[in-house]
Amino acid sequence: MYAWYAEHEHDEGVYFINTKLFKETTIKAYGGPDMTIKPFWYLAASPSYLEQIGVDIPDELVQEAEQGTRVYLLPESLSASETEQMKDLLVAARKPLDSNIVTRFMENPTYEFASYDAGKELFTWPTDAEAPVTSDGFVIALITANNMVYFESESLTATGLESSQIKLDERAASSLLDEEGKVGICGSVSVRFATVGNYIDGLQKSLKELFALFGIVLAVLAATIVVMVMCLVEVVNRVSAREISVKYVLGFGTWGLYRREILFVTIVSLAGIVVCAIAKCNAGMIVGVALLVISNLAITIASRRRSAAVVLETVSKE
Image 1: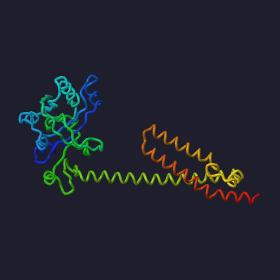
Image 2: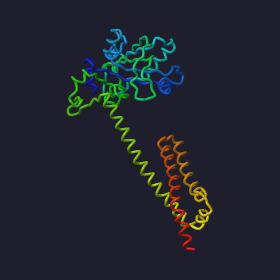
Image 3: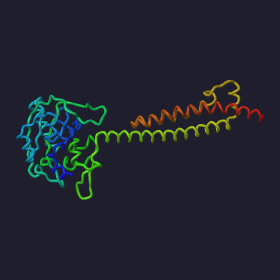
Image 4: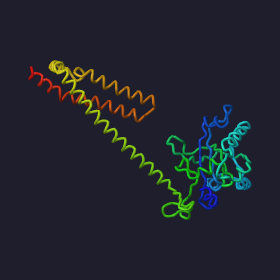
């Protein structure tokens, strides 16, 4: 895939694009505990994409990137100390480690840093509904096939909007892909490109299947709980027939007749909900609440249907 991109990176409509939010934990992991840099958005992009979105890059920087130099654009709003820390962080985060793909940069690591006006809002390519769609203050890495590190070159086949790096516009897709949206990269091996629309449709389909499976599991659990509760009520009616009959004649309601059983079912269900809450399992909490309601409803319905029958059976035996 790297060889394919290196061959087509200058074709019209072929872009290298990947964004990442460097959070405080990531900054500390790469830069150490003394880092004072605030969280920031990182954009690794080809010169063609930066040109398309209106980020002006001097020609000499593009040439350096083409020759294998790692070129970074830092917001000019950074202070001198922040700039030095940012340089150290970027070098540490993208070191030229061993790889099957050796680029010019990995053979002779060199870096170039330049400042730019980072006030323009850029697209973040978000997949998280809570993430901002656009943001400013991006740190930009000018990426070419010659200055990639293993982190980029070996991830060119990654999937999904968040992880993918090679992106094609309609013109490039029509000229480089076959009718199935595939491109051959090595013998019989091919890579399929999906449109953003198809990707989202796939996510929606996956979600529908997930909800359907969740619904089936919940229905099976509900049916099991109902059967178990009805069996419990039936056992209590058989064992405590006289007590149930007397209480029923005296006008006791469901709570008075089956207090112990209701408490047992409720406590067990609440214990399950608490365990799911501790484990931070939202699905388990939802199922627990649903089963709590269903089990108590089953006791109420079963008691109303069977209590009168128990009284009649007890009277007939007496």
